[in-house]
Length: 364
Image (tube, rainbow, N blue to C red; front, top):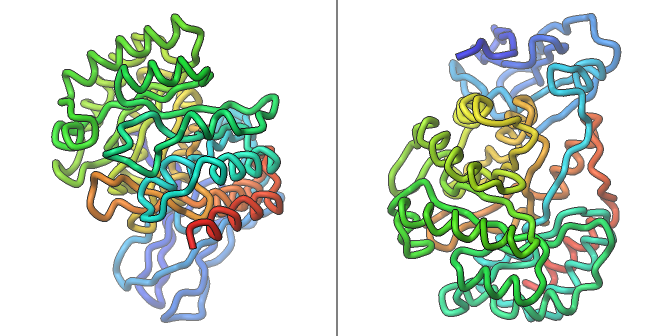
């Protein structure tokens, strides 16, 4: 494994180990047990700060993404591909709502989609074509699609788990579908009623069918960074399954932290393995914030070279088939962080707030 691209500085007052990028100024935020800070490495041209809550646990390592300080030079360096555009897909209308007790009518979901489009969100997942008896929150996905005021340049998509869902998406003219397979046998059976082998075979047929009908496709893996039922996932297993999916020629590969068990280390090691298979800027990450590590995990993905991420307004969402797997990374926080780091998203934060307020009010 390659050496991690950060250096360590020891906060002697509290025994706190802070980790930050080696080619950036290293600043330790004052923690709860001391007002002292580490020295600044004085070579950067300009500082761009990304800060989250800093919890001090004496003698314990701080997840390196919790506080990341970039220089303007390092943000745009070739080390992270030199591309400063990040694509954000809004999944609030699907993943955000499927775990909510209150079911929103299609007309309201379409209104929220329009607000998201007006805010400059270029990728919007409108829902999923699944059995409404199992996921009643997704009933009426076709009506949502019919009611949306479709904006040019926006990629509207839907999740499908089986051939019946794909047939519905094709019939209604959905331009992009997302086809996910769980790397966990147990989760796969609970989520789609199929084991891993059967699901991979079905996914291959579905990808071929979708592409033959002119649809673009994201093929992805659920529970890629750990499973509530089966524990840690070997990166080699991810690589093998991703290779089989990529052989079917989808437009991109998705990796989902469905159980919310990922951490920056597992994100990094998995992406390191994936880099042997494909360019990382062709991968999209779907990250949950179940344990409060969603933003840190996203920073780990950015550092590795990923430039496509899912997020949900208000941090809504989770998997209804995994106990406690609640909360996506919040779109508004993601956009604020990315803009502060010098990345472009095309999203207008002030307009995004309107979509957030609409969905929160509808769920109240």
